[in-house]
Image (cartoon, rainbow, N blue to C red; front, side):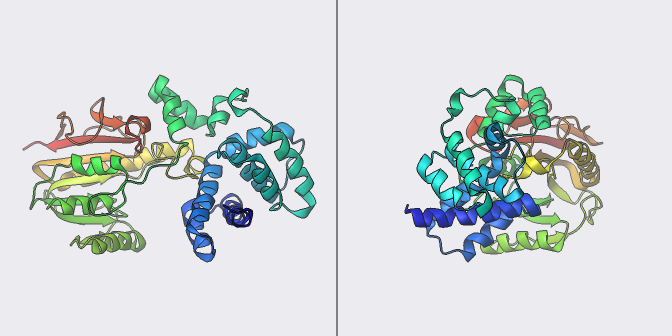
Amino acid sequence: MSEETGRSARHVAADVLTRIERDGAYANLALGPALSRSDLDEQDRRFATELVYGTTRMRRACDSLVDRYVTSPPDERTRTILRLGAYQLAFAGVAPHAAVGETVGLAPKRTRGFVNAVLRKVARLDVSALTWPSEAARLSYPDWIVELLTAELGDESITALERMNQAPPVTERADGYVQDESSQWVAAGVEVAPGERILDVCAAPGGKATALASAGATVVAADRGIGRSRLIVDNARRLGLDVPVVTADSTAPPFRPGSFDAVLLDAPCSGLGALRRRADARWRIQRSDVVELAALQRSLLSAVAPLVAPGGRLVYSVCTLGSAESVDHPTPDGFEVDETPPTVGEWRAYRQGWRVLPQDADTDGMTMIRYRRRR
């Protein structure tokens, strides 16, 4: 990579990071248009993407490295540039002369000398031998996430948190749809038979609904909001599948009781098992959100359970690892837990359900519970 193209990639990354940190933009929504407007080649697009996602994930750790040499808080743009430089030096394996020299040029003119001095000091650090203020700072998470996952996972929490600091692999189904393997395992956990009538609620963007339809089921997908529904329509059409889509609030679903052989509820959740995929989520979600989401999940479970026919299945999943959003929910009235191990995926037994940790198979962390309605 030439210094010129590297500098261009850094410019794109710095501008996107500024939008994320100053304006609250979502990383995935801000980066795509920025790359489209650029004239970067494929290699530099990948570099800019790594800088945006990596710097966002490792923001707290980068701040900890930089703040060893900062006596007063810098302005927002300068802080962004310092983080970008520290990420390249400590975590991305970029040569110090390029990481410092090219990044300094992105800073406001009045702070370039300051940025240069700080990054040169960071470049001399041996990150592997540092004493960090805390494990949360080293791992670059809010304190409460480290505390919660430590309570939930015990000795395996650090490994899970470290794995979620790595970029996720890209996995494709046989039909070309890009979907994390753990999500594919949830769809397989419904265990549909050809011709069965299946409801997928909270279905956007449609990965699980299209997987179920590809298995031969008659699938109805539901989600709130026109925009989310259109995502399902577009993905089903691209795969050549007929998936009717209903725009509806799934806490009050517009379907007759007992009208589906199986219902899949992949519920809105904190996403604490998929933080590597959603780079900025760790800085957005709050501890109080977990409580609110758990209440919503219970409402959804209560609302959709009656839609399952006698003898049918209800599959509940969340891409998080905590008990409050999964195994602490009561079994819906008229249902019993299906204790049969899933036949697809690397699931661990987890109380009345099943769980996969990010380090188990290099997937998102996921929890699934399968219920069966009594006849």
